Image 1 (cartoon, helix red, strand yellow):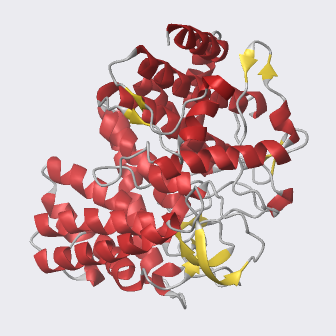
Image 2 (cartoon, rainbow, N blue to C red; image 1 turned 60 degrees about the horizontal axis):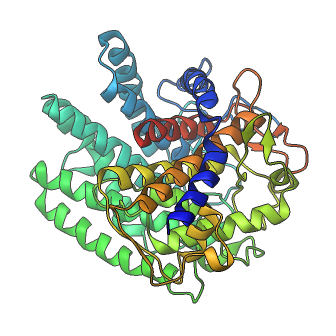
Length: 465
């Protein structure tokens, strides 16, 4: 066993030997990402509270406010408000959040044939009226989550009056949170388009964020005296969780993202999609925290193997002294802009690894190796043949081997950070995609979600140390 641990330690060091060289870049990229993200919140030419997906206005035109993107970005702004002690900065972030609440009200009151299932809005708040894949029912759930967390912060600061008047009231006509929750609770079972806007059916990602939004919404409703709604939301969340289990029960050793297709693209046959990883990240909190889920780990392993087979840039494993991990796209069959890796999906894998490493540090539990997660751990540790870990093994949380696994997770995530650095613009810009052949950035420039993904992964990197 000691020889195996020595071998593994050397393997991990091959990833981490230049990790300190990465720290300076990571800190600099964080500052750049914050500035560039905030430039896309209430920019000139858009309504206050709008979050543009990208400044790009042609090929592709992303000069719109997507509900999903807006909710995820404003969740980042909320965390900055919570974590900042400087009063001027706090006031700046708070104003953005208050503007977002007002803009949300404009969105909700703008007519759409699918009601709150409208996925995107003009930058003045009007619902987009052109052809599109709608409804997209993850958006209201994500927005509700962000605003619920905002309400909880304000309640802790004694700002109950604002919460009751603007965020949560028993009457959904007066409450942005209540209106989103009511939409989710009454429409979750209907087919909708996925977060990539391409397939109409039932989606793991959508169900996950819907269930958590209702559970957290129930907590807020009960705290504010709306116990009947709280009970109803919890019951709907229980029903959603029954649907979620279908995505684990397909006979595949991974989570299948899309099921019961009724419309949209018909060539997503593998069932693999990084949306499943995003589902855990965007549901994370008091109700979702199992980042060692065997099927989640197996999904990551299987999708990485697929991307390594189709992305030539993944054959490049060194950038100067830095080891480069695989880049990740959306799903193997992707054809949008030629089907390429994305920054936000690659960073999602890094964030997952950092979170799991942090959990192993602060809440150590034995790792149980089974037939589903075995390949993930063996690939992570570079083990094969006689050295591979077999199903049925238990890695004691007090052992040196356990620490080797934790360090390997951090090293792999750092190698993804090195990959991001390798392809990012010299000015720190992160576009939507990177060309699978050349590695150069393409599609929408300065994608706001790319910066949000970097920021949250960076925060988790610091916690994992």
